[in-house]
Image (cartoon, rainbow, N blue to C red; front, side, top):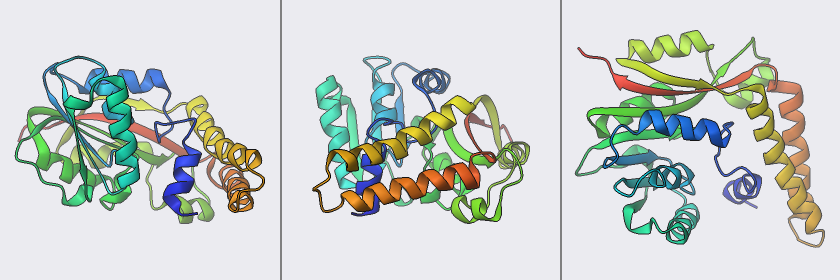
Length: 245
C-alpha cells in the first residue's frame, strides 16, 4: 500500500489534514477571506476540504486547488458536486510549486503542505506570486514547542521555535493579522484520529492482504508520536498580509 493510500485511510475521520478542529478552521477562514466575491487558491489542496469550507461561506466566492494526487482531486470534485459548489471550484492536477495562473487570488492558502515547496519561506514566496493587491495568505506549519529529541528532528525536519518562526516570516516581508496555535486537545485529537483510523480499518478487514501492514504501521506511528515528538511538536497557522515597502 502506497503512502497516498495510507494517508487517505489515516485521515478518514479527520479530513482537515492538520491539527485543527472545525471551529479553528472556520475562524481562520473568516480572517482570511476579506472579499465575499474573491478568489481563493489552495496550493496542495488534497481532497479540497479547505476550499469546500471556504466556498460554503458565500455564493459569490470562487476557488481553485492544486495537487499532484489525481485521486484526491477526484474526491474533491465529487464532494463539491455533492455540496452544490462544483461550478465555483476549479482543480489542477500538477505540482503546486510549478502552478501558474492568468489571474491573482485574494486568499492563497497552504496548510500542512510546506514540504511541497521545501519549507515555510519558499511556500510564502510561491504564495506571493499568486496574491492579488490587498490579498492575504493563510499558511500552517510546525514548530518546536520545546527542545526536540534527535528522533523528532529526523522525523519532522529542521523546525524552529514559535518566536523564531514568526520572526522569519516578518523578516521576509509579511505582517501577521491573525494566528492560531493548535491546542494540546487539537494536537492529540489529530494523532489519535490518524492512527486510530488506520488501526480500525485493519481490524475491520482481517482478510485484506494489506491489513497486517496497515495495523503495524498504525502502531509504529502511534509509538513515534508518544515517545518522540508529542511533547515538543507544535503547529501554528498564520494569516498574513504583505508588509508595505
